[in-house]
Image 1: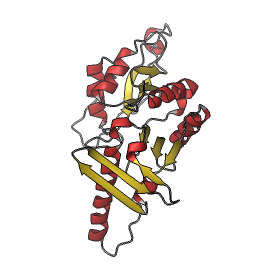
Image 2: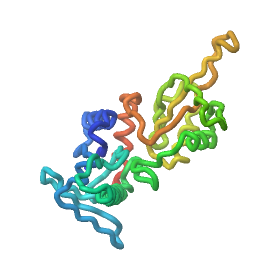
Image 3: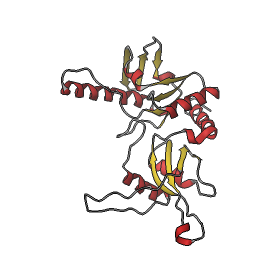
Image 4: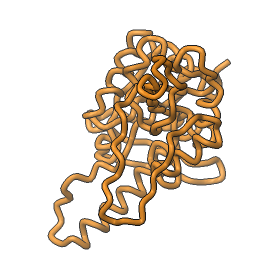
Length: 252
């Protein structure tokens, strides 16, 4: 079976789930982290054979991690909400225990997951803008000039309007500007240790500087392990279907 793991409010993940169903991926389940943590029975084993789990879902079905062939992991954060404890210390302790459990469950699925959990991120590493910019430079993407001020009251420079996302899935790039080399996007995903990466670009208009109306190549504006998938349209869904069906160890 295949899984799409996401928060119920993640519309991009629901869109991907519906697109995968339409392409015949089955059996396919849409599950939330709330459902995983709200199971009526959880058996988690770690031994010389590896880590695995079985969960009894709220509707009575049993989910065995060994039966999972592929996962689109969109779990951004533990779904704590309000924990009904009388003291903050008790709530904090429960939150840490639930977070550890969710991380462990996702790690069991890591070998067949798109964006498995990382040391500081449940669906891949979350990085600061400066860290992403440093990786983009190493990958060979053009980046805008950085402005740094020692004045704590200085206003940060306003960012130009975003041009749109480029999606990287494995070795494939969807949405890169025409005539641009796609390899830097793939290198950025590798450097970030992500199977799926969204890259935001900015197009800079040089007309006011040159009077020619020419545009310089799009520059890097940010990246995320949890991008909006919908701009990729059908080409992205087709590639996602192929990627997921190839994740299982028994796949050809």
